Length: 471
Image (tube, rainbow, N blue to C red; front, side):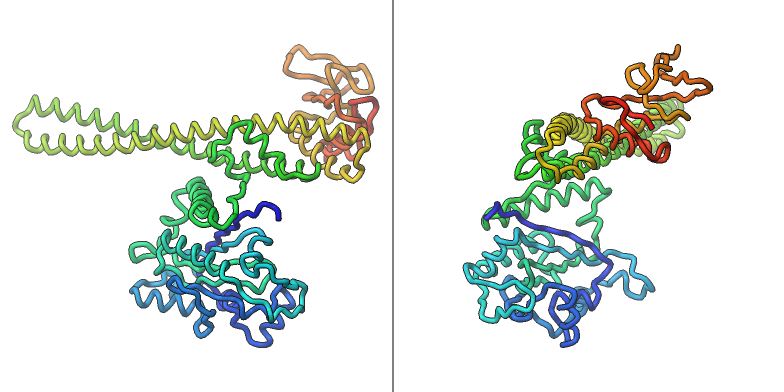
């Protein structure tokens, strides 16, 4: 069995529909079952194995009330109003649906042990029994959710064993201090904080539950910045568990995309915190000026002494509050700066790995060792070079691509007096901004890259010499 990993998926909504509730509870009519079987991978012969956890105990799934009805009862009992009640369209996020699970083989082992289960559609598994391990695991997950978000906020905690992969559906009400507080509990102030909270949730779920059950946390490539991986760790992550060249390329592309996304988030956070610090420092300077003026007035005019003393006391309190906020924001800014620096360091590792992959891709392509990789090579190589090359590429009326001061088909090229600008000197041509086609590419790949880059400026590309392209 491959190394098992945990699964945790959080989805927020503005309520739960009867249709969703029926799916969770298998609260279907005969016709409903027929429709469900047409669309999904359900096994009616295993439906009796499903169960739910109520107050920490295993119970058969209660179908007497829908989940919306359960939620209404919870709110009524606690005297909490549903903010979406009475609205034409719901606008408040009042339900958090969390799916807990793990790698397919491991979850099947917990649910069915060594029993033979036929997962083909229409198979009869009515003789399969539910194992105690899946119940104990579900209880641990229930305890984790209860401790983190409050047992009183769990509207449903249903375990499905009648699908391809056993899993839990947890319907949670984001309530705190007697009111709905999704943003405070889950979302945070911004996307960055939400991302951090979700990453911590995965880590805590692994630490508190799945270390016991033989499942690893898994590596989410979107977390590389938050986890402050070293360059060497990042390089190992890029190639681990990749058994084919295509998988290695695909993993690298995902890592690159995710770290770029994290960098954008970190840059926005640094920018926001910098603005906050600047505004606080400006406000502090203004209050200090007002305080100094009030102290001068107090020294010069004893008639309004009581009023001035009150003003001075008020300004001093405001300055103390500003100092506390300033210290907090400056600390967060320093942490954000460090994280951004770490992310950029990891980006350097990715770029270094990029060059290694390109060289490897070229070697395989040149030697013809694996023909089936051609489409992947084309996509990967062209994307990598197009991103860098197309930003500076121009198309003159002659369509020539120039490199190192030489036209790819003629010598009608000169370096202009402005060293930062290159121009084609063909008669009546004033185009500029030419860029370089990388020399280490094979002819065919060079042509593919050029064609992808010049799309819109030129529709076809031919290769005139090694590394030289012309439209």
